[in-house]
Image 1: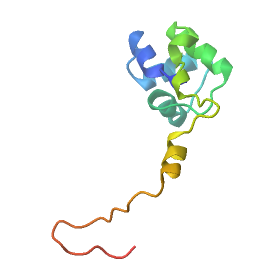
Image 2: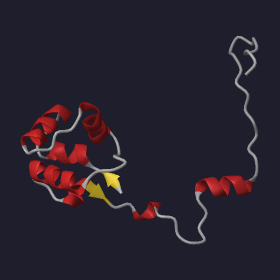
Image 3: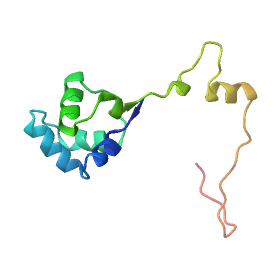
Image 4: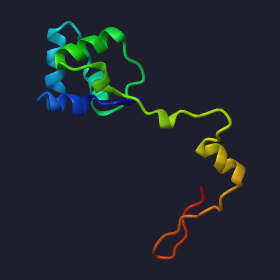
Length: 108
């Protein structure tokens, strides 16, 4: 699933996380600044269903506006992930960083 809060809020005329945070608090959902920042600019790890209800009421939207399905990201049985395919292909050549002035870098 792709989290689409910021675009949904913008479509409803809400341009700042703090503005949405105040509106949510007026409806009984008090969110810390840190959590609001995560909701606004990232992909939340977890979110209560009750919180989703409040967000939808405040923005006047449907859950399908906030959560966009991405079925192409679901691994199918027998299908290798990108990491598994890379491991199966063998080790990659090692690239050592070098300075532009020709001097060596300190040992790691």
